[in-house]
Amino acid sequence: MVASGLLEVDVAKRYRCGPVLMRLARAAIDQVDVVATARPHLDQLVKAVGHDAYLAIRVGDSVSYVARRAGTYRASLDIKLGEPVPLHASAVGKLFAALHPDLERQVLAQPLPPLTSHTIVDHEQLAVEFHEIRERGTALSLESTISGIVGFAAPVRDATGRLVAAVHVSAFKDNLADDDIPRIDLATRACADDVQRALDIHSLTKALT
Image (cartoon, rainbow, N blue to C red; front, top):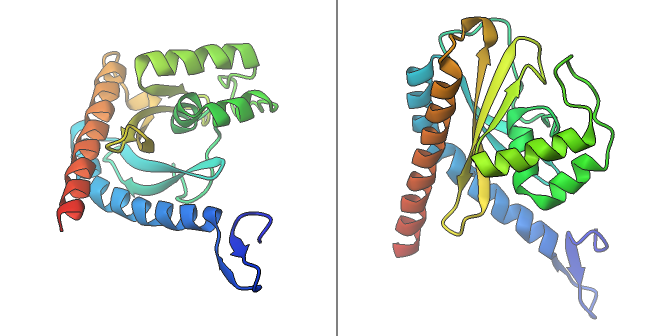
């Protein structure tokens, strides 16, 4: 545990929390704040688009959903909270990888297993998509994780600009009209911006109390 940074030991053989454990503890506190802050905004997003809305966070080298609000178009799809999502295929996975250089390097150095016939399995092509995500500011998954599912993801940042979470919408392709993809993309981005502003207010309130 000392070697991993979870604990530190002094010359008197006394143990105390190491830097990695302290970072994990701070991250856990931050995540509780993010989830609580995001929930009402996810509810509004569901009302606006009708599809399932999620909040995702990074934990170590993986990304997981930590909150979900069910839409009116639910069927048999049930994405489990807390399980890692594929970084090379899911909308939130690609978003986090595109915006974190260490994750991007990790993804591009590994095999890219095909999850559906639409999954990008070529490293150069995926690198191009990561660049496009950075340029556009949002990510899409067009049936690349689950056949028939279109995913949308937008970043949530803290006051320092650090990526702390992402808002995600999962929609059944059969329930999407031609103009729904740009509309849901904009709604997802707007929800992420609302969560971000709410976090800024929450952080300022905590600092003043």
